[in-house]
Image (tube, rainbow, N blue to C red):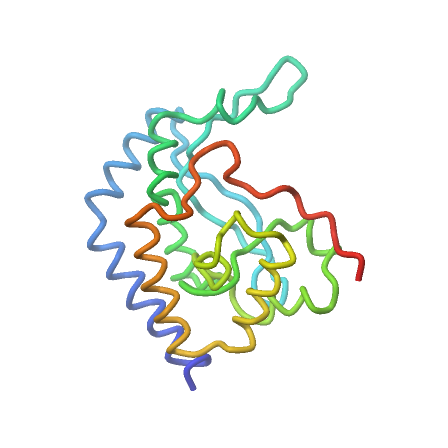
Length: 202
């Protein structure tokens, strides 16, 4: 009952509520990022969702697309903008994903959607993370985010899939809010992203 109906209802209700409450902040951020990023305030990237269905993830754009003479993206410190560093520090860049939630691509709570290129690298255990919709935050995020290993991350993701419930989601939601407010485990530096996943031996 919860996973089929209540969870979706709460996703829509909470997403709409947050978007309305934060609308002045979102308009301000959109305006600033529109100017800083030459008319492109959003970052889009294809990610796999439930049952590995591909969708377009939306985030606020925190870095420019500056490249070197060989066409390679410049290092993080050369591309991140001042406002980009700020929105990463407070996880504000994630807010547009509420649109993904309203579309049904994502849930508020679930395993974070990873890169498409990782799909062929998953073993049978790791593939279980795609049995549910990906989330803006999840069980792995409140247990270390990018500070944990890939094996730990996948273990947390699969644990969530197997223990998905209203009680679990509420616990994750409140712990996420606490971590964001305290900036606990929020990385706004060049190591924001984990080392690339290269597959498991088993």
